Length: 254
Image 1 (cartoon, one colour):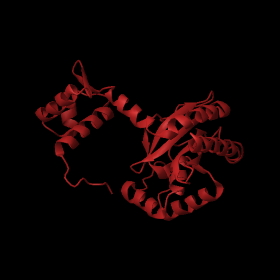
Image 2 (cartoon, one colour):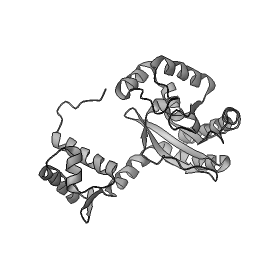
Image 3 (cartoon, helix red, strand yellow):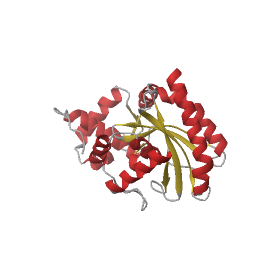
């Protein structure tokens, strides 16, 4: 269930819809954008003009695009997360040691948000990039975070974001997810077995603050052919738990 503003400002919401739609369309002409949003050309043009004046949108010939102004805001938001700079070296090392993709993810607004991703020499291209939002229940990283939240908090996440299927293997039942989270707490790591992307496996573990609160999660991802279960549960689990311990020490003493 989405959180509703008590006194929503429709013009603000409309401007945000325009920005998000421009991103989805990878740029668009005025009429294309207006048709997609089912709005008059004049209305969309007024919003675009305001966004251009504030440097959030640029116009390339007849095509409107999201500007790099958002990159500045995104970098600011990411740098406010203490875990980012402290975990980044460990993510880079995990990628180098495993040859796969190593990731750092945090929770925000009941989404999982990638802060950093590093590719090893054998890594395959993935749809992961800083700022990408994913459902928590469909990733090893997200399940690690959910496993260290209260039952009430997990219920709130499910109510707001649901448990949509990303693949045929995604856990879409709340009771089954609860059982999975129990296992994650017991073993110290979570596995995504083609639950978000077909043909891909991922193993993750939580990173906690000195007080024991979860502040993020780290993982290693790769194709199922390169990620047999014994590699995940033996070699990679040990490496991840060691890296998480180093990050937690940095967090505690920095």
